[in-house]
Picture 1 (tube, rainbow, N blue to C red):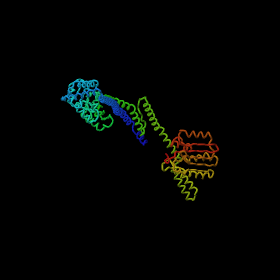
Picture 2 (spheres, rainbow, N blue to C red; picture 1 turned 30 degrees about the vertical axis):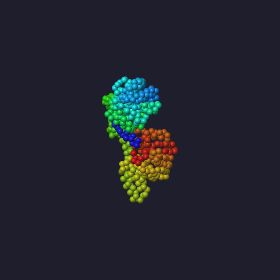
Picture 3 (tube, helix red, strand yellow; picture 1 turned 120 degrees about the horizontal axis):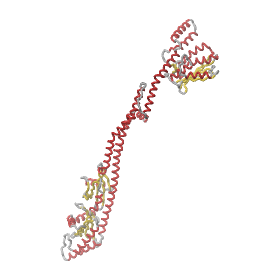
Picture 4 (cartoon, helix red, strand yellow; picture 1 turned 90 degrees about the vertical axis):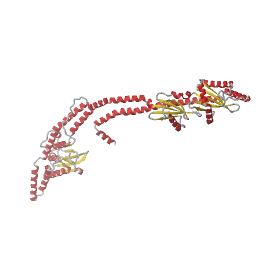
Length: 606
């Protein structure tokens, strides 16, 4: 799979890769860094801000709970106050005296008409109200509900009269019955919060009356109000029955329904709960007491929180888009400067590949690309020179030299003449002469080359050589011994026409014949991925200086005419296969000569 992808990648033109690179380079900062980074930054900023607000809300919950606990503790401690016990005793004493004197008790708010008792109760209530900043109004009603005293911090008749009109004492008594506790809360229709407790007579252990205080609302909810700033666009505080205690800021119409949903689902969970959507984050919280449960909701606007960030992002996006044409112009210039010249050079190289000779890149550049173009021009001109001169000349030389070897005599005339002699000899009853003529005919058949091919298989070349050796035996008899070791697996391989016979003839003429007799060995095998042919004789050998001259002539570039021996074979092989192949000679005087021929392994000859 990896290899396929690599192959596919290298098939893609550089021009396409450049366009893709530019698109990625342009889109990456805009999309990934701009959009994705901006979205992630929004989330991080929102999360950190919400965490900060959560910490503030948790602190407010803790402080509010502490304030409520202190207030409740203060109210509970009042039942042990000696002053309350004193005016309760005074009240019972006055009531008993009036009963004895048969005087009807006044049921109005002015009490039973005892000045000293009124002074005692009102003085006590005033001292409590004035000493506690969280209390606005204080009231006391005796057990028989005939006498009540109400004192406000501001000495406001309206506040004291509202206390009576709203029947706060009755509502507190009902709340105390429901909770069955020592104190209870009541919230009127104007969201005023009251706390009251039942007082008992120390001696009779019976109810003596109830003590009620109107709590300053700011004491409990001012902390929520102060948190409203910046993205915190709204705060809403409500008690469990739905009575509104605080409503401030930009709040939705269904604010109560939202908190009620929170109460229904999360009332038993943690005191702080978060609900988040695309536009805002809502932090819900609760504060609990005996029969008072305040729920709050802080509405945080993401639009307000992220206004500056979004504004900055828009400016950044505008700058990116506005500078995009400049960047594209720069990319186009870079393409024209670097990529397009390479693209053009690739086209010129394809022209050469298609057979056009002499293609050049005309350029006056002096940089790296200029050097590349200049080198290409030199290479193209060199190829043109080689094709027009050296290659054509060598092809002509090759054809001429091959034809020179194969056309040493008029083969058609000679072949036809031998055929007539062969039949004539057979008619006269001679056996030896026809055999010699047939061997010579076989040699001539190869030379005629009816198939017009410059290559023969090893098997065909061996038949040709066998005919030649047969004729040599007829001439020299047993003076010359031939030995062969030919690998049968090489029979199908092809070699240039008639390269073995000249070498064997050379061994006879220059090796064996001068000494009168000898042995010639022929070997054919495959070795080190080459076809190796050896011709070895045990004749007179070659003198060292003569061998050097022979080597010099073999490597000489001068045209060979008339010579069909070792030198001609060497030049033919070099022309056909290159410098890697050819002949090597080793010889010692009076010991013989070894010729080694190395050829490529091929079944086509090429």
